Amino acid sequence: MTRRLTEPRIVVATHNAGKLAEIRALLAPFGTEVVSAAELGLPEPEETEQTFIGNARIKAHAAARAAGLPALADDSGIAIDGLDGAPGVHTADWAETPAGRDFVLAMTRAWEALEAAKAPEPRTARFLSTLVLAWPDGHDEVFEGVLEGRCVWPMRGAEGHGYDPMFQPDGYETTLGEIGFAEKNRISHRARALSKLVEACLAPA
Image 1 (spheres, rainbow, N blue to C red):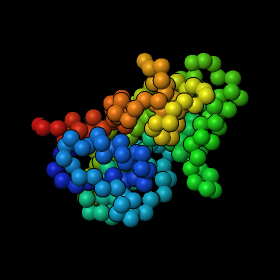
Image 2 (image 1 turned 180 degrees about the horizontal axis):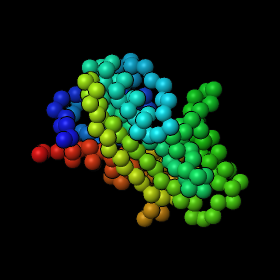
Image 3 (image 1 turned 120 degrees about the horizontal axis):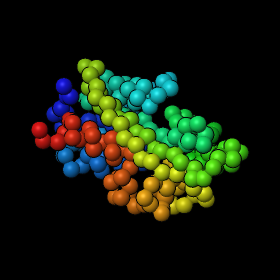
Image 4 (image 1 turned 90 degrees about the horizontal axis):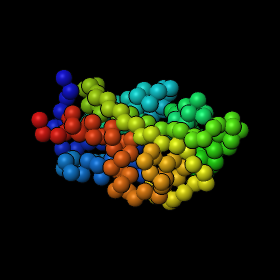
């Protein structure tokens, strides 16, 4: 049986401000107080798994144990068909530089790889999100969301974060980088995963 979230406060196991803002906005209607791992000064555990669920579990359980509170972790990324599903779990790694993460560099790398592979149009892709809600006693619940679309070039839009400016969701003529915050939170892969979490763990029984 799915465990209900009855505690009034949870930790979001992230140091990513964009991801935190999305999750905080999506949980706001339920009166759940959200504090981030960064705000609590918790370290970021090493993500050693090769799956989204594996890495989300690492982050959620580490934060739950350290804070003594339920913790929600997201592991997400973009899987590009023309690159055999890459970057996938390495989505953020493609942005790493000695000076920090550079997603313009990551998007350029992805597009250049598609060009080198002569990938046919439409260059289909999907954003994937796996949420793990963990409790200090080791229990967890897992929820997944998918947003289908295609890669486009040049990058468009300054909204969102990560690879949003090169991703055009199915049914839209705009990229996630051009869609406003509220609309993105309605359709995103993370919103879809979180809606499942809300229905299972937060919505009135």
